[in-house]
Image: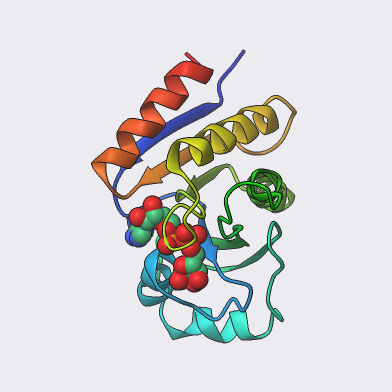
Amino acid sequence: MWKKQILALQGDITKQAVEAIVNAANPSLLGGGGVDGAIHRAAGPQLLEECRRLNGCQTGEAKITGGYRLAAKWVIHTVGPVWHGGNQQEDLLLASCYRHSLALAASQQIRSIAFPAISTGAYGFPLERAALIAVTEVQNFLKQPSSIEQVIFVCFSSEDFDCYQKVIHKLIV
Ligand code: AR6
């Protein structure tokens, strides 16, 4: 029976009551603006302390920390590609962010995970193209057995939410 769930909602990822939230970080893992800044502010200074011990993260890969003051027990930090026009492996690297984040979550027996729209803010990745990659990778990952039962795409703006809804409808429903 298909009891796994993929959904989009509009909101703030730092407020999500899931086991893990994903951070769209930069290679230093030492914080920044956008969703990264919001997650560090909400989790508190211990998150930065733990991040300092991780020695950064390469584009397309992921590392895990505690969630500290967040409702989420875990934060999975992944580094999306900067958009350079589409010919610098941006699609592959973005897909790799989703795959590595999901694999890391599954390795911790995590059941619920929330993603922001990785790379689509400061890093400039076109939103619909990114959403198609995100939903495809999650859908493929959920076809195999793992602990993950629920994946939420948390969209900050109503435009982003509309785009994800359309993509989910096109690819899944
Ligand atoms: N909840 C959910 N989504 C959010 C939130 C939030 N609280 N805040 C912003 N977003 P960005 P990137 C959305 O720029 O493009 C940082 O400085 C935002 O509207 O946060 O991967 C890092 O340190 C957009 O849709 O991440 C890196 O240097 C999405 O999150 C760089 O930005 C991603 O936008 C990473 O750039």
